[in-house]
Length: 468
Ligand SMILES: *Cc1c(COP(=O)(O)O)cnc(C)c1O
Image 1: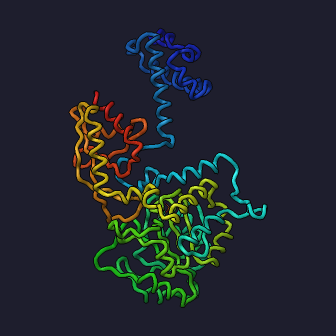
Image 2 (image 1 turned 120 degrees about the vertical axis):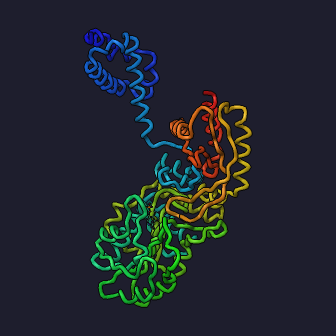
Image 3 (image 1 turned 45 degrees about the vertical axis):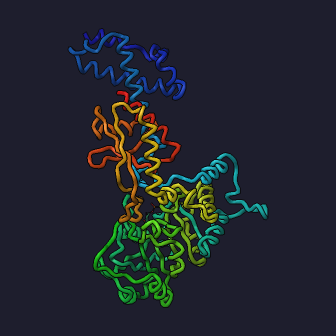
């Protein structure tokens, strides 16, 4: 019996001629579709043979062909889904590490566009017509914005910490407080990075309290760097103590040591007005006397993934001459995006034009108005769904300001047809994917992190769900 079924299986050539497969052939290419068809067909054949007696439930030639088409489509869909693509972040987590952290500003996108399309002066000095250095323009801009002597850019902040410690402390000791032996996530652990840099760790103080004298007493002839790491994603509260950065800087200066601060977030604007009190700005760290600071390009700064190292020219020069620099350096697209982002800060327009800054600065009132308008325009479309305003909080995310919650107004979605989990899944599998969250057994959206241009896409996804 299974022999008949197997004979009913269409051939690759028959399948390739089917109308339903033409769009896929047009987009993915004939060879690619043929290869995948061969695999799907082989898998199906083996399955049929395995099923033996029950195989006649599978159906006639036409049904078999349909089943193969379905399996092929699922395969391409799975591949497409795993490719990097745009998603709508309706979670309200401004710097969502799983969702690519910071979306870029229009100016940064425009800059990438131009530099990607054509040649650029990446390592060419237009004034002299001779070979130039990467990042000269960016260094000048960062100097204007932050008053630093010099700057270097690497792939991310983890790379910045690694190359800085390797340059300044290889073979010697790095002093760090026990309260700062942090793990950022993604297996970035300060003690491991120090070990990889070729330096030895010299822990001082306790988890909750470290005094200036602890640092002073630990300095010896092997000491190369005093490291301060911002406890990005957690806080030690209660009976705590650590020396002011100014005092630590004075100690370092007195003993002729560099003070290196790993800031993590790279906050360039004072966030105190937003109720965020524990994100020191880069300018504050430099002013307090840190010799070198490092931070991410795609956290609070709101630019592309990068690690920015700023500080005293003598140290930055040594870092740039480290052979690791070649392995960790960034490409022209990153420079273009970073320069455009910094230009927006220089022009004083960051709070409105840098997307993560704009999202953080959005007031509860403005979000309520958006949510209200959204619900009104959804009224006629959303059938079995019901949409309501729900009080809630957004968070910064990305290992920044873990204690801060920004008041927001969420849109709660309930359905007579689907559970909250089902709604969440259907939106996640939408095209484009819409990532929402579930709070108190209700699916909620936070428009704080949704680009206004994406609202119609959410509306049409809801309309499709509502008409089930
Ligand atoms: C986030 C963070 C890092 C790592 O930054 P990436 O840019 O993700 O590599 C390093 N140190 C601190 C303190 C951080 O918060």
